[in-house]
Amino acid sequence: MTLGLSAIIIVLVVINGWLFFSRRKINKDINEISDKLTEIIQQETAEKVLLQTDEHFIQLLLIQINRLLDYNQRVAADYAKTQDSLRKMISNMSHDLKTPLTVILGYVEKLKLDKKITEEEKEMTLLRLHERVLSLISLLNQFFDLVKIESDDYVIPLSKIPINEICRKTVLEFYDLLIAKGLRVDIDIPEQNFYILGNEEALTRVLNNLISNSIRYGSDGGIFGLSLLEKEGAVAVEIWDRGKGIEEVHQDRVFERLYTLDDARNPQFQGSGLGLSITKRLTEAMKGTIHLSSKPFEKTTFTCVFKQITY
Image 1 (spheres, one colour):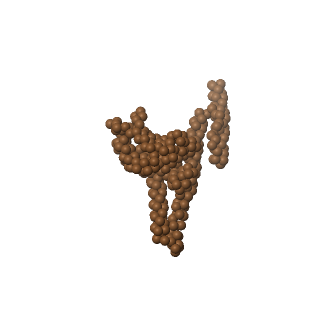
Image 2 (tube, rainbow, N blue to C red):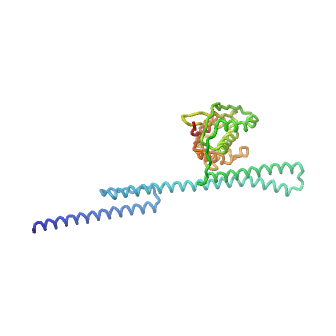
Image 3 (cartoon, one colour):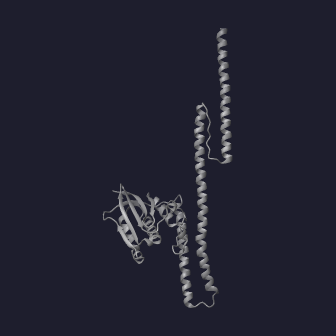
């Protein structure tokens, strides 16, 4: 009896000792995790909490902590990118508003202060003033359209639409301008009707923006092209030219809000940097994708791909 009791006591002492040292090890591990988390938060680093431990529940805890740190770091990176984009957008928007407003003010001051202005000069100044005001209104409308399109509650009603007919109709509206620019027009739209789940107004605006962009920046290539292709359950619209194109360093950024190439600041082009951004948002709202490929003076192509409807 005494021997059995002694054995029980020894077992209890061993268990108690094991629990004591196990508890100390767990406390040490938790303190190390806490210290490392404090360091990561204070120094705002992208580190993870690394710790060698045999405790299964601490291993699971480390996995969840590192997942949370990874998520937090992605959120912080996205926030920093958004803030940077917002600063650039405000800077560019200020530039795009300040320039026409300064010109408008110049015309107004000329009309108000120049006592020797002739009727012919006054009429010409009023015409230019009117053009500048319309241009400014167009810029503001584009900006507010983009804000509306990017809002969470913006929804485009989608239905089955004939992409062939919309492409033909849109190109036809630009045909006189294309000819006036001296451009050769290469249109390839099959007779067979293709249908997509889209929105006619939105698709027309996408095509208008891309065709206008091609005319504005690609006219020096002497040709404008639009092709409609069937690709493995999808329909692709390619709008292309052989102009000076867009260098590779800029190609990933052309769809950013208010991003413009240097010569888009040239009054000859009057680029706002909003058209392609609106185009991308509208294309995505119709469950499509858009991408750019460009080799200067060989071929620059904007391609919009939509899922084809066959029923």
